[in-house]
Each structure stands twice: as structure tokens, then as C-alpha cells.
Amino acid sequence: ASILRILNRQIIRTLRQKNGGNSSDGMDVSIAHINLEDREEDEDENATEANLDEHDVKFKEVTALFREKVAAARKKKEKIEKDTVEKARELIGKMESLVENEKNIGKAFSGFSDIQESWKSLPKVSNDAYRDLNAEYNKIVELFFYNINIYKELKELDLKHNLEQKQLVLEDQKKLLDMNDIRLLEVEVRLNQERWNEIGPTFKEEWDAIKDEFWNITREIYKRIQDFYNARKEEQVKNLEKKKELLARVEQLANLDLKSQKKWREKTKDVIDIQKQWKMIGFVPKEDASALWKEFRSTCDKFFDRKRAYFDELHKEQDANRDAKEKLVEQAEALKDDTNWKETSSVLINLQKKWKEIGPAHQRDENKLWRKFRAACDQFFQARKGQKQEETAEFKNNLEKKEALLKELESFEPTDDRNKNVETLKAFGAKWRDIGHVPFKVKDKVNKKYSDLMDTKFSALKIDKSEKEKIRFEQKLENMKSGDDDRMLRKEQDHIRNKISKLKSEIVQFENNMGFFADSKGADKLKKDVEKKVERAQEEIEMLKERLMLLRDV
Image (cartoon, rainbow, N blue to C red):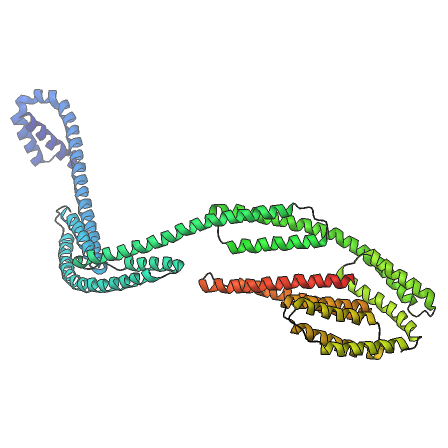
């Protein structure tokens, strides 16, 4: 009853507000009616009116809060429906991608199961768009199972093709068992492994057998490779010891106190030989290679630095000798046209003695200065000889003696006694030199006939070729000494120098050729042949150098 009265009063207040505070008859009747019914309670209503206003305010507050909650619930529901639709579209997109792109059946089914579980977990909402998406999803699921059937057929063909390809790789791997080139074998076995791994799966019933055979062969090949590298490791350890020995030898040479050009050249040859041996030895363990090579190279550099310092000092001395000999050349050229035969002869002879005392200049200067000096002396002495009779009775007599000796030499026939034959021919040479000069115009002819005869007779002797050459050269040298023919001496020197230069060029060519030989059995034989040629050439160079020194002494 209290609530009804409160509501009646609220209605009356509302009606008054709508009418702007004015009353009408109908309204007054209603209000009067209400007032008659409630007159007896006016006093009570006045007492509670204040409380009604307070409840009215609270009622409005509760109503507003209820509306807010209703709006929030509606908004949340709309968001859930929107998110559900978006998630459904996302799953449909994944399903479409799976159908179009995934060729592996196992992966396809796994992906399908994940998508299906996600689809089932979507909230159940009443939404037309969602129902359409659900229909589209079911359509793609049907397409998925249709494609799976096609994939299975293609997979059968693919498995068969993969089996054929793996069998081909297996055959290639078997062929490698007969390969001897380890480096090539190492490359090929890895390539076959890559090919094997790139080929897809095949029938399970075939797979175990072919897989086991392939990997058994592969392990066997790798064992061969490993055995090779183990053996090479042992070889490298041996090479390390050999190179350490060469390092010790080169250190000894680098610390020698050498005082002559000859010694420096000899030891230089030894160092170069050691360097060649170093190159021929082969690899050492990787962890030792760098440090060992640096030490070896540094020690060789030390030797050649000391050699360079020695020859720098020697060149200074040779330059001083060159300056001194240039002065002798100037003096000789100033006297070459002098006609004071006796005094000038004495002066030129003294100049020649000084020339010998000075010592050599550098070879490029020595030869040039010597030719100038000798030409000046020859011009004077030839002019002096021109003042005498070209032919004397002594020269004619010498010619007759030499012609008789040539006839005797022609009739000489070697016996079985080797030593006696050599001594006889040397005796012929001594007799020839003792006879003396012949007339100048027949000198070359007679000497050539004698030289040819001696060559013929020595060739007929049963002695070693190198010994023949040595005896012939000794005889030739003796003839040059007795003949006092500087022109022949110079000619022989030039001939020997040219031959040495040619041999050195051949050695360089041989060594360059060896650098192109591959590491193989055939190449080793070629290398040994070339090394023998180099050794013979070096021996011949040393022999020619000895001859050149003998000629210089003359």
C-alpha cells in the first residue's frame, strides 16, 4: 500500500509537470478521487514523502546500471561473433592452402587434423555469415579428400621413380670401390650421398635392403679414405723429420765464414740443392708447416744476405781493379803506334805484368778491357814482327820437321796397350810443340791438319769418352800455350762460355717443366729422367768451368 501511494503521488507529480502546473477538471477529479481514498492517510504520507524521494533517486541509479550491463553484454556477444567469423575465414584459408600446396600426404593429414580441431572448437553462434562459411568449409573438406586420393596415386608413381633413382645411385657408389684416385673418390662419394639424400622416399618393403647396401658401401669407401689419410699423416711426419734435417744443413751453411768466390758459389749450389730437395719432399703436418717454412726461408735469406754483402764488397774491389786497368789500356793504346821497338817493348811487357798483378775486374768489364789492352799490345808487336823477314830459314826448317811428324802420326796405329797408346800420342804432342813456329801463312793449315789427326787417333783409342775429352783438351791447351796465340785462347774461352750459358738455360727449362708434372706414377718416372738430365748438365758445367779457369791461367 505504501508503494502504491508513492506511485500515485509520482503519477500526480508527473501529470502536473506535463501540464505546466495547470489543472483541468478531469485531472482534478482524479486527484480528488485519489485524495478521498487516501485522506485518512495524509498525515502518514507527509511523514514518508521525504523517504520516497530518496528511493526514487536510487531506483534511477539501479536502472541506469542495468542498462549499461545489458549494452556491455550485447557488445561482447557481437565481438565474439565477429571474432568467430574471422577465425573461421582464417581456417578456411589455411584449408585452401593445404589443398593447393601440400603434396606430402602425411603432412597434409596432420595439417587437416589441426584445422579440423580448431574448427570444432569455434563457439556456436547464430550468424548467417558463419553458416555460409561453414558450408564453404565443408566444400573444401570434400575437395581435400578428393585430392588425397589423387595424391595417393601420384605417390605410388613417385615411390617407384625414387626406387629407380636410388638404385642408379647405388650402382654409381659400387663403381667407386674400384677407384684409386683418393681425392676424386672423396668428391664422388659425397656427391653420391647428396644425390641419395635428395631423392625422396620409396616403398618400405624395398627401403631397408637398398638403404643398408648403400650405407655399407659408403662406410667401406670412407674407411679407404680414412686409411689413406692416416697413411698420409704418417708420411707427413716422416717428411717433417726430413725437412728438419734440411733446415739444420742450411743453418750450418748460413753460418760458414766463406772467403772466396769459389766457396760462395759452391755453397750457393748446396743451398739451392737443399731448396730443391725441400720442394720434392712433400707436405708436413698442417700445424707445423707454417712455422717450419718461415724458419727455413729465413735461414736461406740469411745465407743469401751474407753472400750479397760479400759480393757487394767484392764488386767494390772489382770496380777499383777496373779503374786501374782502364789506365793501363790508355797507356797501351798510347804506345801501340810507337816505332821505338826496344824501349816500347819493355814498357808494354811491364804493363802486361801489372795487368796480371792487379786482379780481375767484373767479368763484363774484364773481357772488354782485356780485348782493348791486348789489341793495343798486338798492334805494336805485330808491327815489330813486320819489320823482320816473314819467313826465316828456321821457320822453313820447322815446317819440314812438322810435315815429317804429321806423316809419322798418320802411320801410327794404336796397339792393345791403352796406356802406351796415350803416352805415344802425348809424345807426338810434345814433339810438335818443341819444334817451334812455322811460316805465318801456312801456320793455320798445318795446325789444323795436326789437330784433325790427333782427334782421329784419340777417337780410335779404347778409353772412356770423358777421359778422351780431357786428354784432348790438355793437348789443345798445351798447343795454345806453345803457340802464343791469344786469339785462339779468346775464341776457346768464348766457346766455353756460350756452352755454359746454353746448359744453364736448359737446366732452367728442365726445372720449369718439372713444375708441371702431376703427382702420379708416370710423372715420377718423367721427373727422375729430367733430374738425371739436370745432373748431367750441372756436371758438364763444372767441367767447363774448370777448363775456363785453366784458359784464364794461360
